[in-house]
Image (tube, rainbow, N blue to C red; front, side, top):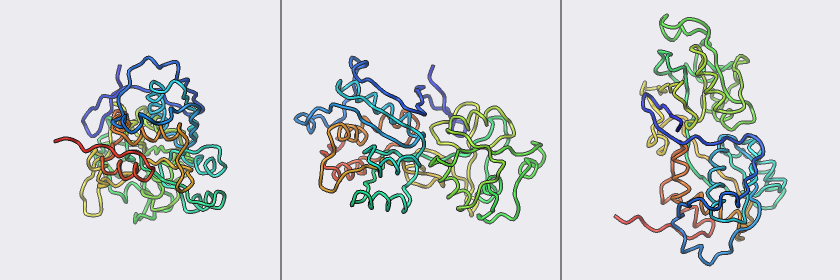
Length: 340
């Protein structure tokens, strides 16, 4: 049965997919008979070298399912390819790229200046950054929790020890927010420190402050959502594509009191406060082409077929002009204009 994703009362159906949190090895020849969705770039690839070999990636666990689905798609098209995916968290990508153990590093946060500098010192040129889809961090509570919205100051007061976003005191009990309609201590849940999701939430929601010791850490967004769905007094943050019917999202109020919800267009335009780009960092010497395996993978990712996979998994697709700008950057054929 398809899994259901709930966003502020609406339910979106999507296919359940396997989640890889360690090392996944896909043997492409095993699924070569399945149908393939065209990339819309067949003409440009007709004379290209057929990719053969192993595509290795190291990085984000948030993007593990997406990377896996892109790899499965290529597996059906190129019987000589296989994917080796290590999804240990965004923090694992920069060291692997710098050490040269991978050419591709998926990350749900931007590289830090120190991470970029370490790469450039080692290789003598800057790491290349591609945006491959858009996502958002959402605040979730149990589906029966009466809470509907939070100010950014209140959110900081729930999760933060340092209160850098303007709050005067920490929020510890639900009665402080809900006028007695829910009793007991607030049970906050979040991601572990190697996660790009953890770092983004700390930066944006805590104003670069420190988490309270009572925030229970989990290795993945799915685990956060599962914990919140099992406890009416819990609250957590997770990636938009991990929502289940057991939780609901909480609208975020800005300084003017305007409520923002994680609707796809608001995420695409960056209007939702915790919108984020999902990135693929690439080790490519300036002016050189990527090896055929990595090139074929990125060709798919930056195509309508690749973006359709991202949307199917609950992410937000990139506009065609943004895809073409990045395709030109890599020397890939641009996508044809959409016919009216």
